[in-house]
Image (cartoon, rainbow, N blue to C red; front, side):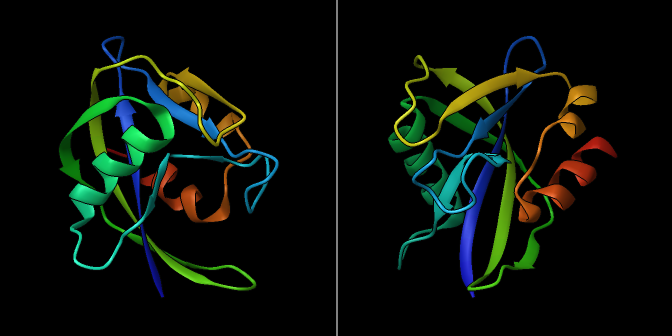
Length: 127
């Protein structure tokens, strides 16, 4: 099983960042909370901060961990480990994703989410 982190990044307007996966990525054009694979010897929190800096060029601070979700795709099983975060500095520059949107909580379900992210979205909506 692959452990993967993801960030529910909240901005000053209380909107959440959603990122659309690029054409070259697995699950092309599906929406996700950005993050990435935990490297050996790395904590989930360190992984998330590194991945967000690498993928989006921004700094975040972690506010709260949420329950993880284990999902089996046809070729891989992942444990998706989410954190609520806040955007602390930097301008978003997409390195891998096709686009991003800042959305209010009630707009999240309108997107075509990657399957592993769907339970994370639903849990967040019930907080």
